[in-house]
Amino acid sequence: MFSHRKHKVPELNTTSTADISFMLLIFFLVASSMDVSKGISRILPPMDKQTEAVETNVDSKTLMALKVTAANQLLIDGKPADVGTLRQRVEDFLTTRERKHLISLDVDPAANYNIYFNIQNELVAAYRIWRNRAAWRVYKKSYEQCSAEQKTQIRTLCPQRIVETEHAANAEKGAEP
Image (cartoon, rainbow, N blue to C red; front, top):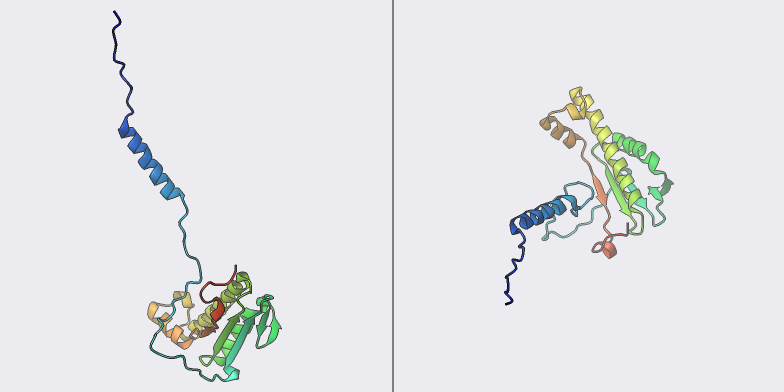
């Protein structure tokens, strides 16, 4: 009397589902932002754990002391200064002291990162100008046009000697941005 028909249940095509999920995975990998560490690209020498820190006396005539206070004020050798004049003052300092110079940078942990990076940019620009002048004097061409060996010679003539003070309280966690 009553006949039971078996109904066929439609199936999902798993091949296309796998393809779609793979494409979504690739899309999110490409579209998502990766955490890239940013900072100043300088290569520091490896720290030797066996040597002890030795204090050295530096002649005050060969030292330019830069200090940034918690109020984001720049002090050059203890006197207030503007970041805009820093490049020229560092250029003059490097030109008169040649290889016998040292620039000390002490930034208060509460200072703003922007002023720190602006100071770093001005220091790098002053060194670039100093090295470019030396390249013109020695090789009669700009520093950028020099060969790798010539650039090494110029870096030997014009070493970048910057010392930064590390504050122990914030060495672990870093300063606030």
